[in-house]
Length: 259
Image: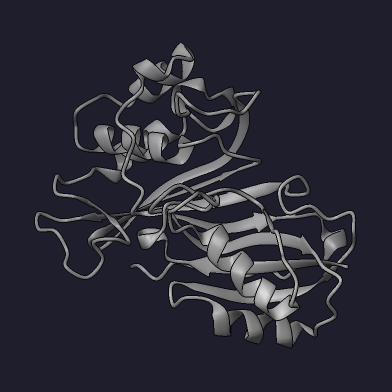
């Protein structure tokens, strides 16, 4: 049978999602835990691979297994074998037509910036620190230039392997809550480093380094070398993955806990 599951994890101590030799990855931890519960080798498919240091509040996976377990047993059993920085939130049987990656119709990311003169001892791995005061009005003005269906070559990693750089950025918002600046991005899919590159450009504009039209100029250039600095991974969270209603997946989207 095919099982879908939803995870959350703190990516600070992981070398990303994808399994690699001799490094600690989320995929390795999850597959080892589920294999213990199933009493057979389990390989999982993920909605979106996250980079080293990137977090997830509602990552979606699926796997096929001959083991018969209740939803409660999958969740409780997996969590008993997972490390403290990974938690299985939900698991359940799903139709064979479901695919964690290819069935997804939308993805949400949340980038958190601690914006104050002094760094934090408490959220150093969970939010990106920027000591310069960021003007969120300028950042939001720049963000509007990126919304829509565009070729995002300027905002993807040089090593990105996606065959098509066109993505539909459905929403991009910037808000301030006290010392924290929140950048939220919603698209049909994202390219490698796309959110971090967008955040880097918006932060440079918010700090007064560039004018708001710079975002539009970078987009039009279709050249990564024209883009800004890639923002650190610390503040990036995958917060939600959307699927057609026919699959009836629970929506566990949540705020990442910063105000």
